[in-house]
Image 1: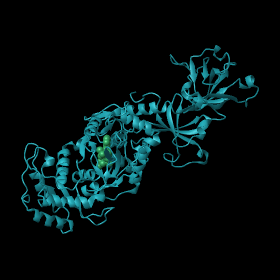
Image 2: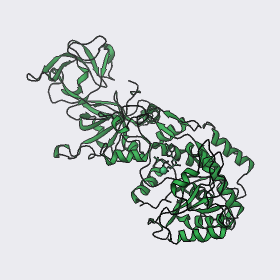
Image 3: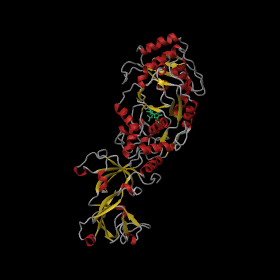
Length: 600
Ligand code: ATP
Ligand code: MG
């Protein structure tokens, strides 16, 4: 009953959950239908969720691929084990909340394919709604002798905390009575003290080998307005105090976070044990489990750094297709399935490491290969002129209909149609006047097949007399070689090239992206990550694509044969002005090449 779906490999988190389900650790708990204290939950129904996890972003930026890992993990585990995952905006800092970020975070979770709605309840919460409880809990800790108001200066507190080799020294305020502490804490709450004049500290052990247990600060004074609670509070809880309480009020069972919180776990348990003893929270209380954060090569995964890239104009916005944000990856052509597949492949571990960007690209290819329609496109076009066209077909204007499967392995998806004619676009690199060894494409005297069309024999090229640049390549059609007609294979060729008809090709802006950073671990060592930006991460070309691409909508993926996976995009982000001529033209972003091109 508790085992995972067989195709999912096990990991330490699954083992913990399966053990808890087998032991029925949380099976007796009740749920109030919404977050609440012990009394509220006890008055509720048996919890319909077998486990509860949560994804708790701070709404101060757009989510990145690291957050996607956490989303897939938390929502995925809930899904697999009959649980519920809560979306919780961690807004306990009195900072301006930007609705833009809240909306973008909800969108990102939905787009990845997850939902916080379950059992008729919308589990979308704001941590600031728990301020009243957090305050009550702090008073309870004080009354029970587990917290005190410290009025040492910040320097004194730092000096008296000690360090790894040196135990801390008790504050002179540590022996205050609960009554004194309560009165002083209420003065803090009532705005009688300026910022920094006092803090509330948990009373644990100043000699603990874990510095986080040396009487950590749990409340500080900050005369600041909060977007949700306005000016009601001038004291705010510290993250390490707020987070366990948020989990407990929401009946979370497995609180999964990144490794840097490992040293906080003893305090997490200490706090919830005290609040449980004092009868304030539901039991058994949640437990914290840590996993290694995702580090992805050639990008940065920190909202602060990503914001700087946006603010300083190094990229066009949070959704620039080079950004490792979820909105950026989406505009780049990444699918939700490919990101979920990536998250599954990298798994979870307890050791920090770097994942190579190629792992993400391979997940994309594996997802799109069976799905994406095929098409031909010419990215760096030069004209190929069939000089004997009228001789063979009677007129220069004749167009010969050709077709190819929409997808080579799915004949039921039908065929795409396009026109062969006297003039075609081909890749500039498909012609060489003097071919290097092993070059089988166009050069004078050589025959190649224009894929899905005819065999032609190259006769030379025309150069611009001034620049010397090739403006036209010339060839003669070899009759009776049309693909799919009897005897077409009688003429053997070594080269097979892609093309687009001049008559029906669709002009397209093509954006080729390269790594955003020139080094695998931007900012590692002494480097300033801004100086490691790859100046050539975007190349914009004008090419031509098969007529079928005209009907594509922004977000549709296609595999351009030979060139890789592309996604239709909307104009405007990189080209600031759209000329009349460009209007209605399609824009394509290259999502990934056909093969791993990163280890060049
Ligand atoms: P950032 O430093 O980018 O702001 P954060 O951890 O401060 O990241 P939060 O909004 O607090 O951002 O994160 C929400 C959740 O996402 C947290 O539970 C956090 O553990 C998880 N998370 C953030 N970054 C990563 C990452 N690189 N890999 C895995 N999980 C991550
Ligand atoms: Mg944060």
